[in-house]
Figure 1 (cartoon, rainbow, N blue to C red):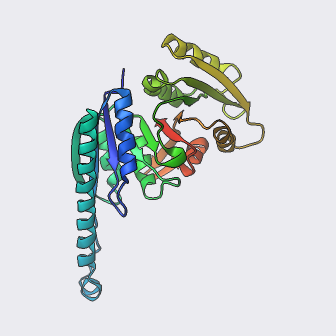
Figure 2 (cartoon, one colour):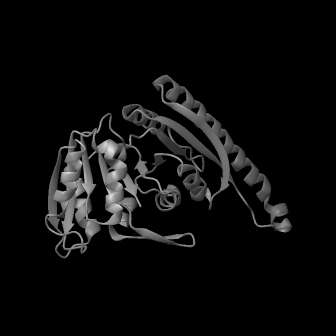
Figure 3 (cartoon, rainbow, N blue to C red):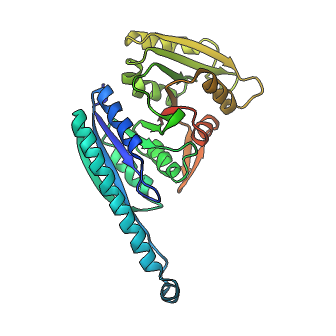
Length: 281
């Protein structure tokens, strides 16, 4: 199934998502033939009720000013998005909502459940976006594309894609979710890291290559022996060497109330991304 309906999350607080991110997302939607909807959330700052502290420090006024700043950022980002997306012929909707800092991820994940893909902007270290990214990855049920600027930016085209393959359910889900992108790529590498997980055995990537070829994707299977190294370190080294435009992988993790407990490779790529990431859970 092609990507037809994309959601882009825009961050308004403490700093708004930059114009370069918006332009990248619009170009990506145009490249995939999809329409794109932007969702900007105004931050709702909920202060503990303490009349004396509020009187002495004016906390309510500070909170109101920050909320107004966030709302203005939402409006400005959506205006820029609307102009850019309409010009490219990919405009879907421009949505504005409100959520407190601790539930923004849940709000975005809920909106993403009726989309083919959710795009979440990141910085090199994610910072405040990490909770949103994790919530969308593990709670939306939809693939999540994390991207930023520089090395994590989206190129004009998809020249080289890497699919991390370990034979797991999550890897199979990622393969299926990313198929419309894999079909557009000039080069696809199916990477299996050996001696790290029971299902990731020698030759297992060849069946993934066979499946991709059945869908018109020319792919190459590669294997690396992890030896005594952590899987995250092995994957990180491979990405630094090959520099793909996009890494596709299954995300391992579970939630404990609002705490996300991540698998080794998932934690590694989220902590310090080396490229744009498409993650499925």
